[in-house]
Image (cartoon, rainbow, N blue to C red; front, side, top):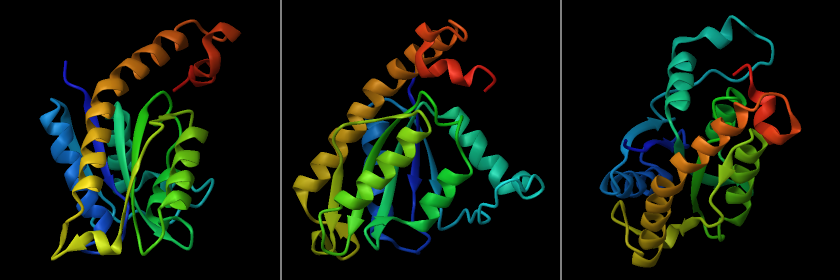
Length: 200
């Protein structure tokens, strides 16, 4: 059975460099044999998260986003680095989700103005981990100077992104399977944190 991978381009800007990174990851995930779907947060504009607003939570684009997240076993999350953190569009995506990410695996890529991307990558990993999801221990980041004529010109960064995608396809199904098996143990401590998701 093919791994199910969702590529999330987490910038609201048209022609963003993080979208370029996400496309490289999507191509590699497809090569690795995965079924790949894409979510572009420039095109799919989500309402700003308001806690407890049940009417807003039923917006059509939010239902679509939840369905895609439920479908996925693994995620490539591509973010720009804004003010030393992840992009607002991707943070808003996280705020609308929780159980849909539990037991899943994410690979993180970032585009930055000139830094190394560590701040935004750490922020994305923290968000995903707090949803009880797993993140690959490695990542990739590209600086503004790594792009030429609308493409990623740095072959080393391209290779890192592709390796991430191949590993995501490799590990995401196994981790989700283990998480679901643990959840089947019920509320016992032996289920680990999966036991907190019995009603998902």
